[in-house]
Image (tube, rainbow, N blue to C red; front, side, top):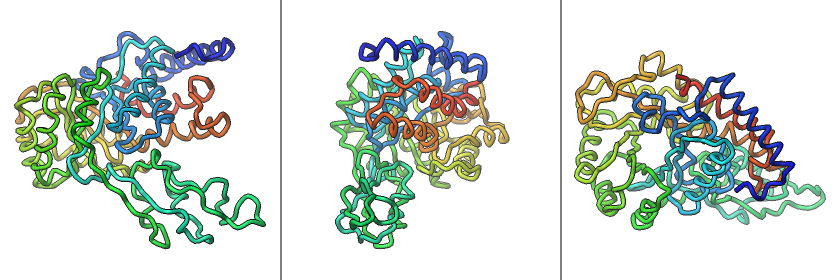
Length: 406
């Protein structure tokens, strides 16, 4: 991993890593680089679990590798990614690079996300750029948070960099970068953008789960019907046997939520040989920075924490999570509870295992990645550019640190 780095760059990298260690130990008191760091399971039990969501449909392997490296160094417990072999490899490469750089003793779990039916997280935008009018102001490109829409070499004013030439649209949606947020769909003034939905293949997923570098799986479901959930679970067969965690991500279905959870748990239970987790998806894929963005997932957590008849499993927030989520949990008395109840659904001590950060986590580090790539090219590895690595880590630690401080 390190052999391709020059001696000069390696020396600069080691100096930067010392700065990173100092930042962690002296500024945030975060034990992510020490041998005493808790395991992912211990983090769930303590209520300070942090998961990075790369995106169930986000497949830019360069960004995923860099994000995985940065957030591994910041101390996350799990990295959730698309159920795609190249994406899983990119996550593991980032983790391994972080481990080699800093001598980490703790390795985050690698989780893949799948769906049992049509789901917002499993879609892509699509349009033919040749159909776009030459005078379009391209609001789709402006609103895209993933920089997944591009008209190469063209200015936003509708002309090329040579203003004497008409603009020719040569690109469109960068498929691997699109994660299906849907922001572009309503803003197209000519209604040219389509959404393409898909369901991950169960056989391909099973093959991924049998690899030795996948630790966990998350099933995204609407919770409205259990038929599709049961079909997927049965199709996965014994591929789930060696997993350390199985998560189910679901929206707030009101009065039907608890019955749906109990039904899904009853389907899983006969061959559930590991811990399970319920991801409470408040406002899916928002990535927003405001305090209001996190209200829905906190309200969802409060509702389930009070429920006496919910099935076993850790509870974890997602969907609209950002820098304000911790404060919201603290105010409700739900941050870092310290007890765990096994095989009981009627304990008053409901546990919030932790928080998953997706769009917001990618956004704050993504700004650094875009700066680095504009200077050094789209394939730049962040460990080769220590100053950018340090900047990215400061952003990541500002998000992860408040959860991880013990």
